[in-house]
Image (cartoon, rainbow, N blue to C red; front, side, top):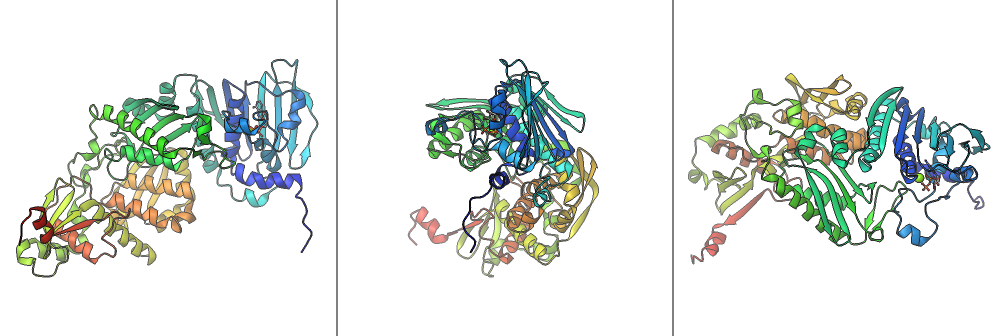
Length: 583
Ligand code: ADP
Ligand code: MG
């Protein structure tokens, strides 16, 4: 065994960089956070080649003194906190003092800055283990940090970078988060010499409209709630505005964009009764909480947090959003619960779908095209004749409120949640088909086109093999539009655009390989949900019976993909008890 030795400083920073500097977008995030911490009111971001070649952030903030420039690059050196007490009440975005050191250990960095009190500007370069001397320079009050050739000295990491388009899309996302977090600040974004976005300072409402689009702005509802030291403000989409993915969900805690399970759960719950199927709400919310009530030092990227009193936060956010949504529900009826004309010809365009307009209900019988035999044999029979014949789930008598199937079997009454049951069946079938590489594809007569962001387009271009394996044929038809040309045959009645969006979201969030391995079941679950019959679809008795027979043949059909039961038996004895009827 070699002796134990301390690691060289540069290597320590490179190791730390693994957590802080995952890709160009994380560099962008750290630099913009520094500009905001320096009270900048105007922040310009310039990228070359998706940020891989260069990321430059210029701000008009407080600047760095000449003698502090070398300290800015030193590991664990910060101007933002000095004690544990400061850490526990931290309000700045940065505080760990390691971003610039980490970035400089894996890229060539140039920092130029001038403070209001200084007669001139200074610049300093750092890259790998080299640090250049501080030089006089020309620069207005404020700071420019330029990061060139990310991972030039760590080729193994460089290999993990994706295409320019993908890296740019991630950068754009990081930019969007920052821009939403501070509507009072001017933001601009350029890529390869072209202006992508310019956002003038405004109120939150205008900024949200500029970033998320007028469709959302037209239906969003203001949230403004207080309870003790907790405050929630911002905008939530009315239930009529939903999206196929979670790409328009922004929560900021004390001004910091966070990904937090607890908050996401509170939001999901709040929307639960007003959203149907696998649609996702859109929101931009700001939670303000006493700094002592939240720990932001959970991960170097500072995107995760921990609440001291999670239950109180959950309750507060949940109720505030429910209240906000109740206010809107009166005005905007959720159209997704209104059945429209059925049949493929009634399919809505991608734009309409993106706006959350109801999808036409598919022809249900066609979903069971492989099961005609059952369908027809069940059709001519009345339930009572068949009770004696052992059909474990019995025979349908009626449909209740467009949600439940009532069936009669030998024991008594069977209640079936039709969407959950169908979803389960599709899920198991998808799994079997994928395992045996026998996932049949159905070509669409008319490709379904939809508006997509760059990241989706990039994902399609990079992962077409994975998409094919999953039964999809999706192609880019412009930098902002995709066309779905084929879908898994089993899901032929789902909205193809919605289905593709959901798939792309998973691929881009988790990567193609994880989607096919550890995330596979979740993905199939999402796909099944899209393909499953929607609430409020009137089913005929034969259709209901066909579903019951499918359930009997499907493994684990007793539980939906979310672990909830898909059916429930009430025996005659149970019913008798209910009516205090002594038999
Ligand atoms: P942290 O933000 O956690 O303090 P960083 O490594 O990101 O750590 O930055 C180190 C220090 O450099 C900051 O504490 C700050 O004093 C200074 N600094 C970095 N960027 C800027 C900027 N754009 N304007 C003014 N000061 C900056
Ligand atoms: Mg920082």
